Amino acid sequence: MRAWLSKVWLIAAIFTCGLVQAGAQSFPSRPITVIAPFPAGGPADSIARIIAEPMREALGQPVVIENVPGAGGNLGVGRIARAEPDGYTVGIGQWSTHVVNPVTYALPYNVQTDFEPIALLTTTPQLIIARKDFPAGDLKEMIAWLKVNPDKATSGTVGAAGGAQVSAIYFQKETGTTFRFVPYRGGGPAVQDLAAGQLDLMFDQAANALGPVRAGSVKAYAVMSKTRWPALPDVPSIDEAGAPGLYVAYWHGMWAPKGTPKEIITRLNAAVARALADPTVAKRLSDIGHDVMPADQRTPEALAAFHQAEIDKWWPIIRASGLKAQ
Image 1: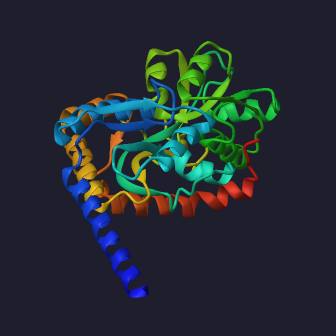
Image 2 (image 1 turned 180 degrees about the horizontal axis):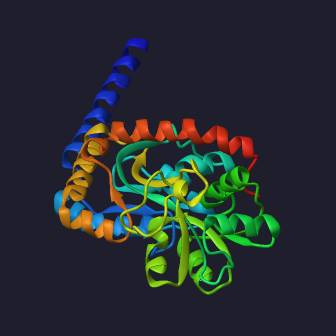
């Protein structure tokens, strides 16, 4: 009886394996959905829409963008984690969703074990911005004003205890300043309120703030990187501005649910890599403030290593702050 059952299980396993292999070989045979876990118009959404068409050309199937905002990106990322591991639902994640949120939220998924990395996409530095009539001419003056006026200023964040708030708390700790936080569902709405004068400050992805800064509807005090950012060459680096060493960058990657067959991951990665290698795509991304990662950093293995390095750097800092989403 046991021998008979063993044969049945072996046949079933071989049949299931054959189905998986056949599915991987025929992939894709229908449209692919890319989850953008923030509102339309934000950086994750923009990246997804720019690479969707060249991915369609490479894969031979439509690539549909679905915005699933809420809880600092956690609702959308959760959708990716719960999707069937067949390659037909993948998604965009970034520094906030895959490094910050796992510490500040009690998540129903594990960012280290519940996803398959596909490709590292882009990076953009963090920018310190303010309403255009904020009473400080440069970063040193802003720090001085905040010290004289503790908890008087408001700073927009994306979700409760998200990446913008982590950056701001990091800034507060290093500069000895304090100010209040106002959470938003996405970076776009927060910057809109900043431009309207309803917020004082924001520590935001430079790509998200690029248009308003260029238009003069908000002002930029510093880019949180070692060097100036080519897209805004007149904005000083954080070292130049007077708070050296406060480096923060938002990066974006693409993930699939855990268990997605390697053959499908390879096919998706090739489509993404082909899209990012297109000069037209790279320029469109650059125009909205996203720097495409070098070719050797676009592999699934590179994303996995980069993600782990970011976790190793930031988790101790975030945990030491005691920051938690309420």
